[in-house]
Figure 1: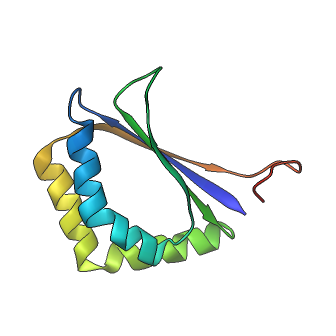
Figure 2: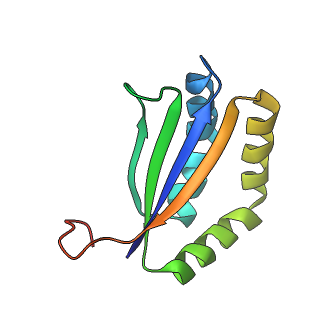
Length: 106
């Protein structure tokens, strides 16, 4: 298993707007295509205005296949356009993580 860690930094006071757009337009698609959401969070302390979510995949090939299928869905383009139009994001990051031998999630 690998984990795709995604971190989105929102403009100050715009995180709720981003989360709303995501929940309405992207969440249904990501549940359909990506399937294994390990968690979806917003920061409370530390670096603020951040959204963090984690997705589990069998391996990098599984991740690429699922993300490619999602990207081909016209509704994904609608989500990307809505986020761009709203101008709510400052930065997006992702990291691919592999569990240790003693990780409770494998």
